[in-house]
Every structure is written in C-alpha cells, then in structure tokens.
Image (cartoon, rainbow, N blue to C red; front, side, top):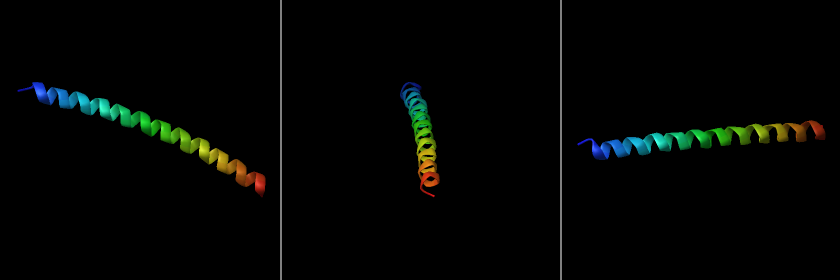
Length: 45
C-alpha cells in the first residue's frame, strides 16, 4: 500500500520546491521594486 502515497509525497515535495522558488522570485522583485521606488522618491524630493 505504499505506491500511491509515495507518489503523493513526491508531488508534494516537488510542489514545495516550486513554491520556494516562486517566493524567491517574489522577494527579488520586491527588493528591486523597493529600490526603484526609493530612487524615485529621493529624486523627486
């Protein structure tokens, strides 16, 4: 009975890895956007 559960577990860990990489991309974008916004603000004041 370990066939299906093994597959589900494998899918879950792959899914978690995917989520981790998405989080990484989002964080990188947030950092870049934050720097951009900061540059815009300091340039306008």
